[in-house]
Length: 142
Length: 155
Figure (cartoon, rainbow over the protein chains, first blue to last red):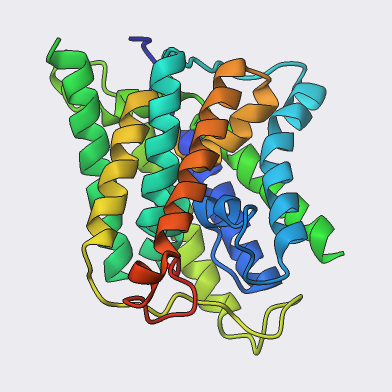
């Protein structure tokens, strides 16, 4: 495993920026900033005409590191330890589960909790527990 | 104009993920590693990200939702479901395993595409396949009739 340092201030500030984005999206489009819902609706079946806006939002996510590199001249550390097989399995489970459960860390964790949704609270506690259990098995049972 | 604004909002979201350190899966995994609390390797940062995000969203939603309508739409599209069914537990349980395996949830994974790593591309392609599969199954006639809202993906 790769050690990382505890960054309370940066994480609080970055979290506030994520919250600001969620508020702005609600103000602009009237919709929840749930990344899994936005990404999943880029694929058929299409139920509304919001495709271009969703694509723009996702493009904005991917453009963020490009902007940081342009302005700051570099990017913060990113360590992806998983190999190809784990990446594929992890990606499939992440995509399937977040859509099956109607949301991920942003839709349930940020927006849902902020709306005091019981469904989102149950979802958030469940994916936190499942994530912790998975890391525990991966790191401490082998 | 609305499209440009949504690009800018995605950009702010992505910048928030980078500033907070959540674009680094190692930081996420070290938060999820409760075995690391005793070992001194636990990274509590993710809790601070959530705290900052929920605080701003809680206050901001309260103000925005007092408005008559969104700036670019005719109404607010808020989730209406309150029922607790099997899927609200099964879905997050499956997602949590994927999250714990790699350290990516959907937002950081899409942001990681801009870091230019092949690993992020592999993960995102698999993630999209999983999303398409889940929507396909959710839209099967045998399942869809149990779902009351028009969109089975309503949060």
